[in-house]
Image 1 (cartoon, helix red, strand yellow):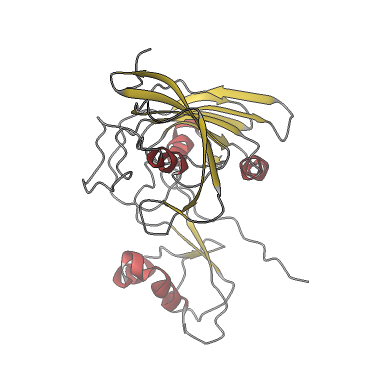
Image 2: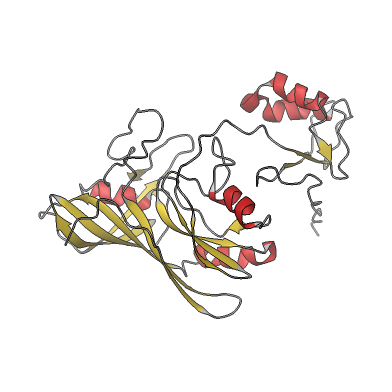
Amino acid sequence: MVRRHRTPASPLPQRDGVDAVRVRLPADPEGRWATVGDHLVDRFGAAVGAARVRAMGREGRFVTGDGRALDPGRAYEPGLHVFFHRDLPAEARVPFAIGVVHRDERLVVVDKPHFLATTPRGSHVAETVVARLRRDLGLPALQPAHRLDRLTAGLVLLVVRPQDRGAYQQLFARREVRKGYEAVAAHDPGVALPRTVRSRIEKERGVLAAREVPGAPNSETRVELAAHGGGLGGYRLTPSTGRTHQLRVHMNALGLPLLHDPLYPAVCDEAGDDYRRPLQLLARTLEFTDPLTGTQHSFTSGLRLAEWPAA
């Protein structure tokens, strides 16, 4: 029988809507680390610098499960839980509001604006949907049931109670959530629509753009032309799968890259976000059967794509 180790609750409160980092020290059969501090420098030194990790130790920034400051010189102890708050990166405020579409005791559905990340990650931490809403709505346990790409706007489903999150995440994993998107790209009468696009998409860690490769398809998108005018088309996209950048990759493969896409067909080297030119992709609808109540939910975004062609 495999014993499961109970993970203690964090003794550190959230900071700016961001949880403390939780670390469980791994087994060390080769004796690589004499002290806990040695391990922390090895683990986080590449990201923030060994000197910064050591300074955090001297400042008492690392604590154990009982909330006491950790002595970095403490003998290495496999299984020990360590908690700390990362240094928050300097983040520019994304100058767009998050619209609340629905809120009850279990769920919050919001309209995420373009340029705002869903969850804290990398250089986007406090300026994320999760961190902002925890602060603004006073819901410190709020967690997303899925993620929406930072440059894409539209509907995001979040769960109020941690014990409910798995049930809603499984809806997405089992593909039981019906999602509809709108997009703007060039209009090409030579591209026969509607059609269903299937391909194999792979995304390498550290590489910005995903790519289509030979092999059995792992992605599927229904593409329909809903409107056109002035050389632009308004498209309705219905994915059956959820690969990274799937809609952008499939539209690019049709020769219809999305308007203002900085990655497809070519990676743009321009630094920073241009708030005047948001990616023209919107998560417009979200439908599912509630796994806890059996209620049929159907949500529609209140946002509109600025460059959707007039009928």
